[in-house]
Amino acid sequence: MGFSRTNTATLRPAARQDASLRLNLLQVLRAVAALMVVVHHLRHELGALALGGTGAAPLPWWAGVDVFFVISGFIMVHATGPDYDRPGGRARFLAHRIARVVPLYWLVTLLFLGVALAAPRALGDAGAATNPAYVAASFLFWPAARADGSVLPLYGLGWTLNYEMFFYAVFAFGLGAGRAWTVAFTAALFAVLVTAGAALRPLPTPLAFWSDPIVTEFLFGATLGLVHGGGIRLAAAPRLALALAGTAGLAVFGTGEPSGFARPLLAGLPAAMLVAAATLGRSGGTPSMHRLVRPLISPLVRLGDASYALYLVHPFALRAMREAVARLGGAPTLGALGVGTLMLAGSVAAALLTYRLVERPLTRRLRRLLDRGGAAGHAKTV
Image (cartoon, rainbow, N blue to C red; front, side):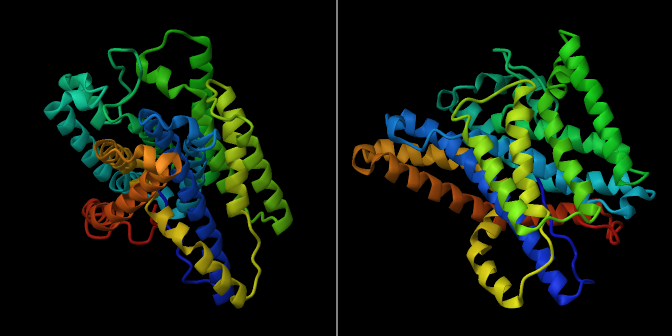
């Protein structure tokens, strides 16, 4: 779910503005996707306070994950240039992915583990914390089943990162012969896995997990990355149509969350439309237009930078706000709208602080360490 900005230093000023604006729109979409996941979980917290009936609208807030998966596929293609096909490219790619994903995830998992061991009654799924093999699998992004059969890591939100890390590993293995080959290799392997998952049952837990059709959503984004890299651009009207179609395509599901092949078709394709709308814009516009648009979207751009932190820390913020409201007896007075607004604001504030004080410094330090003093200096940051 990581993202970094493309180096636009060699572009002409107008082109730099256009490229920056297009990337900013993708950052805005990342912020929207993260907020969707927050609202999805926020509705459950409102329900625990007996406010669920008048909470957030019954929209497919869960589909923020699908948008993230498509964005991730796009970014991997967009940010891996020819330098990653040279000797050491795979190591640089994986080093940057580890630096981006691992530190904060391990920290929140450690925090969850500490709460589970110290106050097991505070968490409904704390029993697995006493199983060392399961805990190790959770830290290593290895799919493992809980006692109830659900394939979730100790910190439940990490199920998406188990898919992400598998995608990164496959993508890295395919590096070496250009981005088109890498995408083709990844697509072929995913096709074999998904076919095996549908035809051969039961499979070992990791294979059953990785063969879920949801992995094809990464390929939707990767294909868009190739389209973007090939120079294909759309005018404003088709992009607006894609954005509206993608939004409408998701909205028809309400709270029903599809599974199996239905999910990439019914949620992944609309998510891909949104990503296409955000990334395939033509160069154009005046400096004054850019000066007008940028301040309007800059708050969401900053939140997009912190979207990984928002995804990982919002359950802690939501639970803390729920406990505070419950203890103070403020739910009847504030109502669903008031409590929901407080929860959303608290989650965003916690994410911005975590990003600035924890995630960004840790990522930079670990990346420098893994790069061994600048070994990846000529490659784009991934």
